[in-house]
View 1 (cartoon, helix red, strand yellow):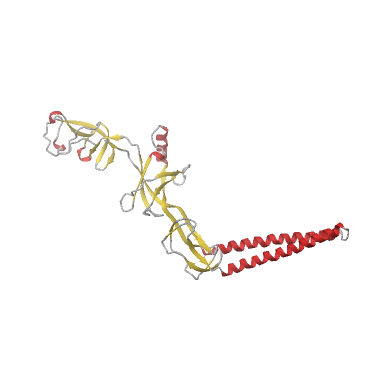
View 2: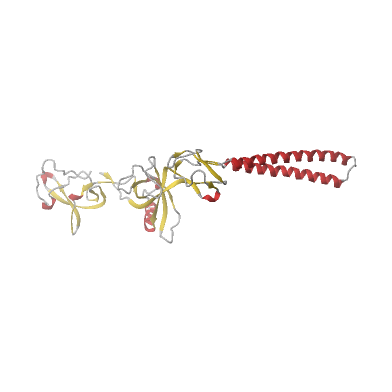
Length: 336
């Protein structure tokens, strides 16, 4: 007996779960490239450095503006304190005090403006050093050192995380309805009970198993399909984004059925049958219903219980009730 179910087959495409295009956030000459094309990087690894001299100078100028604004505010604060004393002694008018108060308020606001400009300058200076925001495999650098780059330069390089990948496929409307009906009838088709496997373009089977990640909640009226995604471990980076694969989806807890060699199955107008070896080596014809193909055999859904002796050689010459003499070593075991 073998666990048997007919796998659902889909043409699928590999996608990256995480992928980032690295872009320059400030304008400047590319000072250094700190990676090799194709290498694996970790979060925080240095990738590029944009020439920092001009940005450093702008930050220094912004710090000086903060110091100047703070000095002006301190002077205005002292002037305000003196004028408040004068106003208390009725030496100056309310209008004169209001004018001094306004000058102090402007000086205090100028400090805030200068501090904001400093934060912007320091932030821009930090952008001169570009690091990896995700871990993954890095592609080919678009620019070489010495080129002028900036926010409008496009992607400098792309990082793709390959340790785990997504496999995108589409369920037909009819298949989705069938799955929903089977779920409603109590069939074990929960995503967590499905076995997902891949076949690669060269015909070999991928050795990792996946899981269903997502099934869209609406049918695309243009294609009549439902988008779905599966996730597969990719520790050896065999799967690459954009790669086409064949996805097989099968129940984990499939029913156990007898399996007989295809060569043992005959067919006439009434359907398929096999010859069973009975008592005293007398053969009898047994009608069967077959299901999925399993290797070089058929799964038998009706007609065999498992453990019967099925004749697999010379069956074209047999008839109901004949007595045969099994040759030594002849594989006449039932489906197992």
